[in-house]
Amino acid sequence: MAFLVLLAAVLLVLSAQAVHHVAGQPGFLSIDCGLDDEYSGYKDPDSGIVYVSDGAYADNGENLKVAPEYESRLVRRDQTVRSFPSGVRNCYALPTVAGAKYLARLAATYGNHDGRNDSSAMEFDVHLGANYWDTVLVRVDQVYEVLFVAWAGWAPVCLLNTGHGAPFLSILELRRLGDALYPALMANQTMSMFGRRNMGGKFTRFPHDPYDRYWWMTVGPQWRNLSTAQNMQPDPSFVEPVAVLQTAATATGNNTALSYTWQENRPAYSFMVLLHFADFQSAQLREFDIYFDGNRLGPSDKPYRPQYLASSTVCSSGWYRASDGNYNITLVASAVSELPPMLNAIEIYTLLAFDTPTTFPDDYTASALLIITLLAIREKHPQKIRQVYLIVNEEPIGNNRRVVKGEMVGYGSSSTDSLFHRLATGTAWMSSWSW
Image (cartoon, rainbow, N blue to C red; front, side, top):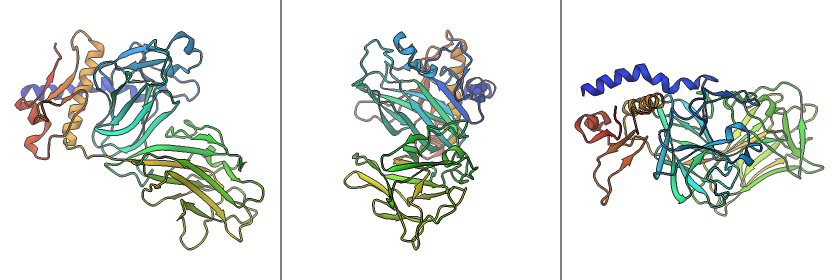
């Protein structure tokens, strides 16, 4: 126990070494995975965001560069990767504040870093803590993003090898959200971003969005794009970028309906939609009814009228899954409306199962400091610490013991079952590190 007390004191002094990189923008942690630790970071010329190496946040893996022929095609943050050829589960430890809301985002851009020149079959799972987040299909150019409420002083993002190639990441980003944002986002809940669309406008992110959300450009053959230079007032519950609110899609010609559709057949997926409206054409009346797969959204007794030069958001109530996998959002002009419906932006989220961590938050946070600090020391003095992980001696499942690498697990609800108790009694211990 004396060792633990001494170590706790050391942690208070040294843990800053592992988290000082968060300084680029307040609440931002932007990791260029595979960037050599000797680089203190660099500023992205397009966004102005400061990217840092991942040495202080991950213990395993190897830094690799994309093949020379890919370098000219990729932005700097995609020119290196951290690959994890060993082990089934490898994790990043991201510093968080318990109870705060966060956006986490990652991408795996393939540039023949493994010399195989074939990503067609590469895929792996990614978890937030112990909970499934998504399956990364490397052949698909896609980013993966979740919104969550932090349950402790750190959040593990883990890559699981599913037998389809070594997992790897190009970037890993963490953004702290305002406490009032996304009222539907609750503790012990994770919302995975299925789509976030800027209707009628171009791709938008930081600095136009203070939280660095990605808003993808979307156009449709049955839509007409609208735009304005007038200033717009965002909805305080979502703080949409003004640039996004200054564009919209509306129905073409004499059409009185505007539709947005998608398909998703995975039975585990249920959806919540957020529709952002801000009118900038005030000369004539605009009102319409809003339907999500035939279910009415917005006012129940009258058509919806978007505010002039100010955003308001209409959300679906609860989570919805279509039995046939087809989803349709339709805006239909009322009989007295003089203008067709318009839509500025749309966000679509899926609900992820989230089990409450049973490790006590204080233990979870202290364990994070333990691991992060040891990683920071290892970064400065690699000869001192070879590897950091915890072995937990639990009740066996079959003939297996659970081995946890860079991540804590739950131990029950009683104080005598806390992590520190297990460390002190020898039922959990630090292993494979030495001075």
